[in-house]
Length: 119
Image 1 (cartoon, rainbow, N blue to C red):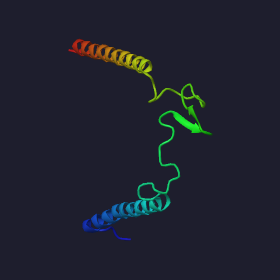
Image 2 (image 1 turned 180 degrees about the horizontal axis):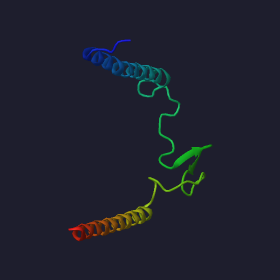
Image 3 (image 1 turned 180 degrees about the vertical axis):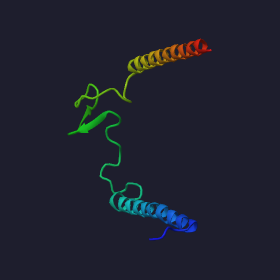
Image 4 (image 1 turned 60 degrees about the horizontal axis):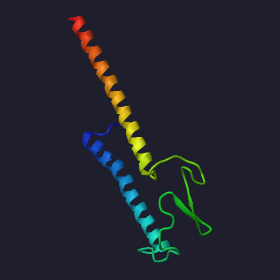
């Protein structure tokens, strides 16, 4: 087994890089064609052409139900929070940033004092 010259290493690097990229492109084209076969170019073959259940709501047996925090399956408050929850989260985030800023300031001052003592 002999080591490849620099041009051979470059060529093999290109080959090893190109194979997954080109293969991935062909897989994506295949997936797109399957999608067009199943649902049509613009979703013409879909049974339900409108979005059902937006955000944290789902439709089960014709009834709209809330999913997530306070809904059927429990969960946490994420993107579907009301204004009061957003304000509470903002205040908590600001407090956390302020606490972190103070900690870093104390740390910086102690380092400066330590450097001054060393001189």
